[in-house]
Image (cartoon, rainbow, N blue to C red; front, top):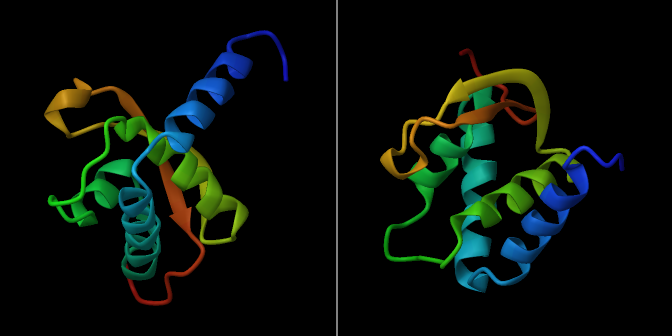
Length: 107
């Protein structure tokens, strides 16, 4: 990793993932698969919308680790596209658009 902030990003993502609620992480992983099955592309917004509101975690940035894990597992693939987040607490920050590797329907 180069010294352009990638190391700090990786460390932060790892910490938030490690300390996230285990039930929330499991629900988030299921939500990634569900979104990947139903649509050709997805974002963190799509995934967060599928996590039951009764499940919470102190650090929702743990979703980054979930998305990376799904990419390693062959569920999704990073694209070079970004969109602005629609969740109000994210203040329209840019988020990655992921390509589903499970979608078999028509868009």
